[in-house]
Length: 91
Image (cartoon, rainbow, N blue to C red; front, side, top):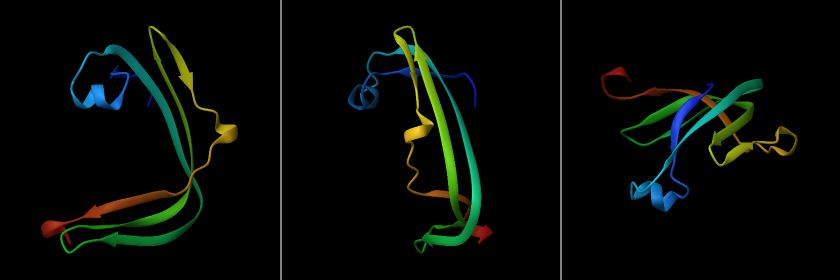
């Protein structure tokens, strides 16, 4: 995704209160790779199944006050999952 327009609310509390914001944009690139392992979890009403794998994520955001960029060299991905939702009549 490149140049996604989004407001910068400055803090989670301010965003939840729909407080003041400034125009901003973000760009991100997610790649999944490596071996995959089937995985699933859910409840009686919701099932999520797919493949657990590895990924990389590069991210940046900018607004009038500056630009922030992730550093892939220090990135730690705890878990990556590519899945498909199944629910209701489509089980």
